[in-house]
Image (cartoon, rainbow, N blue to C red; front, side, top):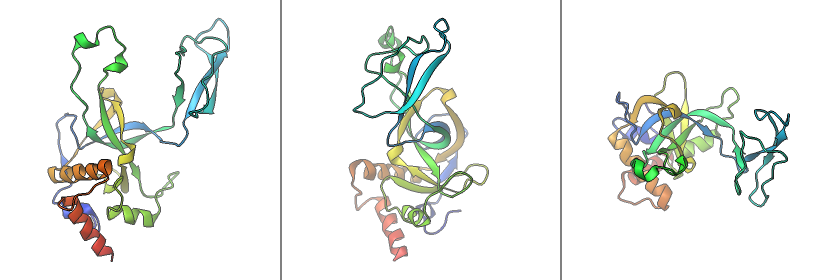
Length: 234
């Protein structure tokens, strides 16, 4: 049950059960996704601890800034080869619920992949992560007044929801400005049976248009629901 002051309350059914194992738009899955910080960290190997042992190395962690040149290794490390123009970034990551935004393009034929690096054609999907809105444990949560404004659809990049997952997960915030790729391999994510309904997908598509194009057409369903939510708050 959704509260009356949420867009989900205007929809007959927001989440549906889908027992298929299909990767599809609107499916809720779980995956490790990085915290998006303003300045990432870089891993800088500075040499092997033992000149004869390639399995161990010393390294430093430093802020990665665009204007800072990459370091050169003091001593090569076999497990961390050096490629010109590349650095190794380090992120904190957390296993979160994520929503599939795009299943990616079709697989590339083998004859077009042969002899080339896997990164060129490895299949991916695009997901948007959910963040817990409530304060609890080490989680700071969102400010209540901010949650209220998200709930009435004030921002194109935030969507309020209550996820249909076991346990007391509370309120969640979907961030469309954190859409990111993850691998399509089944070991990259954890499947759930929950998918957005057809009507919810219609609203999500309009929301994505609003976010990507900075335009919310007056004849859209999302526009009408948003107007009703704003009126309720006046």
